[in-house]
Length: 179
Image (cartoon, rainbow, N blue to C red):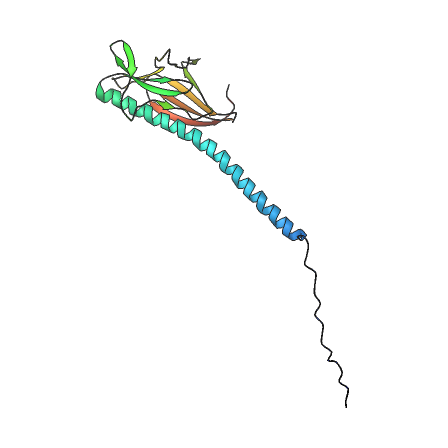
């Protein structure tokens, strides 16, 4: 009888499961998080700038429209600019009354928006429910009271300036702190 020798088989080494991540894996995750944080920061900053720009463009377009309506309708239309928003008024005899309609309805500023209205280099008092008189008037003759409206959001140095005069209404974007 012959003795059989056990076959020499290669014994597979079993590894214990790894505990933790490699340095390369951690660096990849940190890089991905950093890129996402940067994208979010840019998106949020851009949103504030877009909101401010949208408010200024909307105001500019609505005042243009009000001036066209004043000229076409043969009546004066005023814009009362307040801390909370602005409203369009019509001159009825010697009294300013709210202007009806969907297009020229009262509008509220976005939260955190600051507005300053100037005429002839002097800062005007903002309108209030107690003092609803307009600071800007579109006359039926096609003329417009010259004005400078400055809009800013929060403490950001970006501001938008809407200027109106006989030449029309223009919008400027300025990177400087408010005075």
